[in-house]
Amino acid sequence: MMLTKLARKILESVTPYIPGKPIEEVQRELGLPTVIKLASNENPLGPSPKAVEAIRNALPSLHRYPDGSSFYLVRKLAAHLGVAPEQLIIGNGSDEIITLAVRAFVEPGEEIVIAHPTFLIYKIAGQLAEARVRTVPLKDFRYDLAAMRKAVTPKTKMVFIANPDNPTGSYVTKAEVEAFLESLSPEVIVFFDEAYAELADVPDYPDTRPLLGKRPVIIARTFSKAYGLAGLRVGYGMAPKELVEAMNRVREPFNVNSLAQVAAAAALEDTQHLEATRRLLREEKKKLNGALKEMGFSCVPSATNFILFHAGPKAGELAQALLKKGIIVRHLQAWDLPEFLRVTVGLAVENDAFIQNLKQLRRESS
Ligand SMILES: Cc1ncc(COP(=O)(O)O)c(C=O)c1O
Image 1 (cartoon, helix red, strand yellow):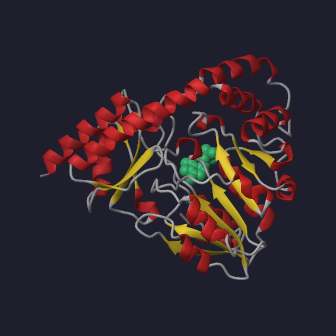
Image 2: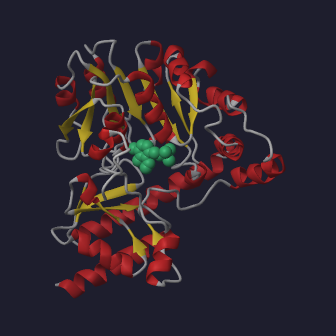
């Protein structure tokens, strides 16, 4: 689509982010009564019941503006995470923490270093800031931190590390992160995107919080995944106080709505919901991995709630065929992985439906 001449020149080079198809859209377009969405790495158990109740209780106050400082949520999170309230910033999803960080710190012409492929928002945010985006290929579907370290130049302002990564589901270890940081200039901000941290079920997953007192880092997390609140849009960043202050200067005064604030605070206390989420993920991921391997697909080992697998040259057609059967998965064309599909671990019945339909489509095509 041609952009209006009135738009900033830079917008011509920005590839719009294409989100997973919403359930309602697929129902409408294909006339299907039930649709299973395994495309956006959401929590299949739904939101924490405690969060839903907190929202209900907050509804009569919707005529008031939200607390612009998210005072209560910040304090709850600080206690939960063992960081100072001054080291926290709340965002409209963790996506917003990414854009706030780039807006606050990256000057036009400076460089950001990202992996390729990885979460698409880093590149978009960098392009909008008129930064030079240096991309470093993955190695065996994992971040190649040694190569990313080499890509850092005196012009580099920020390096993004998604851990676990999306769309691969792979992760970088504590030792790899330590080696990466060893001689990195304190002028370079390292952005750890830990959207899936609570779901990372691997022993050597790094705890990056001790870095807050040592060097410029930003650690972003979210309530969208493990806590099941993707629709509310609430995430947060941990960073040294001076970095938080800078990001607050570019933040909209009321960026996080009042329902999101109370729901996030309540969800944080709902350990039962989080445990149930982790349990389901453990069991169902094993089942999905097993079934995909049995069908002959090779899967990237996943540290989180989705699986990337090689579906072959007809991956796009396969995704379309699944869609016609009411199952939404992600075809990774936009990530330059046209032969790959990404499936989110859903409820047992949803995963079973995915497996059965995939088996049937494989039989029909052979
Ligand atoms: C790696 C990664 N970071 C950040 C996000 C953004 O999540 P949200 O803005 O919902 O917090 C996602 C969402 O899919 C993600 O996969």
